[in-house]
Length: 185
Image 1 (cartoon, rainbow, N blue to C red):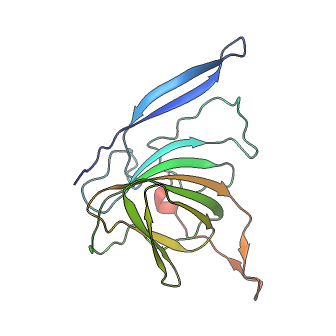
Image 2 (cartoon, rainbow, N blue to C red):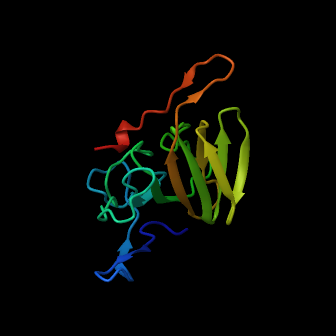
């Protein structure tokens, strides 16, 4: 089984003084333990590796804002001030009890793309859906969890777009996000 570090290259583009496109950054990144304040790679076990790629400065995004490096930083799953893009490497857990990859809701619309491997998407009503390479899930602030029951790591790309709070149409109750302060500095 492949384990961390699973490297990836992040390339940023921008503009030169003449307005022509240019590469502004070409960096090799290692997944970070989202629970580690130093951003070290996750230990062997069930902790996924987070590679935070980019956070926009507002919505709509300001394309000319200076690049802010969010890799290896302890940040929540979503931030209401901008769109997040990250890669998550989920280690294979099989039937191991998992108190890390919990059921959670974010106040966002999330686009999750399986880049490598397969993973189970579990909803709070008990429905489980197996997602394979190339599959895309659009999470609309629903309570869910991810579980990699395969024998290999699963790599996913997530783009998280902040949303308005979700309201139960029958009761008018605002459905609360799951606190993620353990992921933040």
